[in-house]
Image 1 (cartoon, rainbow, N blue to C red):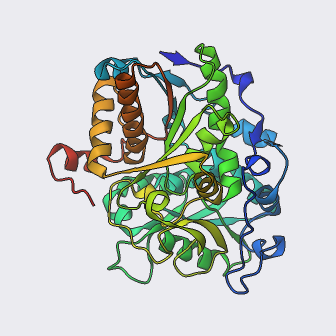
Image 2 (cartoon, rainbow, N blue to C red):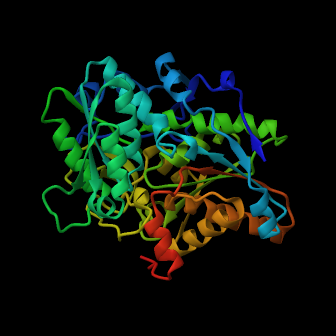
Length: 416
């Protein structure tokens, strides 16, 4: 069962969580002076429009018409009810998922890649650098840069670079350059923190270049809220007053923030972050200031962290292998407004494989985390005999993750 918004119903403003937070966020700190950063400190990396969004207190921020024109290539995205999954589980719950896999890049990531490329192009920037874990963000930014005539260089975590060669091919087809990270240690499997350092180091070395981040920062989560804003309208179309729980994977937090933040003011809606047990930032990390990258070049942010030098074990959900989390997400967990749970990767692939069999869609490994969370919620509803409404973000397809599914199907998967 599918619920589609009319094209003219697509949101034209993003939902800003900053003025609605239970507790105000502490400011990011300069990596050298440890003093709060100002706009001038961020100007070498980001266009002024994004810096303003990073700190804005406006409850909603208008989406530029030029950005809407590109987003309309695939938005609004469908809301689907997973009736066959409900039947397979024998649950009394109603399970809905927002299908972000229909974007040109196959994931939710273009929702922020497009506005980031747009604002940089308006400021005359000719080149962007970035990092990517599993390749979804690098793919999305490559697509977005192609729309605005910007060159892109993507530093891809080496383990994923070697395991997912087709991601590199897609990026190159859209005109980007993709290289493995870390660039100075070919023996290292790499991490997102290392790739961020490589990309930032590159960006600050050239006047024509800025840096683009695919998660964590406030403006990135802001852009992703188009997901939850659409989902809220689509649930009403389905006759649902509200979801009882909203679920998404969490690495840096953009996926989760995108679907969950528009529901944050409704206290009857639970918000659930699902992370890998091998990189349990929210469930086992410490809450405090830390660097966003391994080399200590980025501003320090207050967040849940496993330490900037943490090297996560190699897992197939490369997009979730990050040592920290978005300050917005971290603050919501710390205040008790959001919950968090961690699963080993075999449990997430078990859920993803069941979803593929009954719903016919092959999820990205990251997406398997939200499906695992949704299944467990549905089984809890079955045990309790209630009819809770579950919403999760189907953040991307797994067509370029077949080696991971082969490991699972052939019994080679290791719970890192």
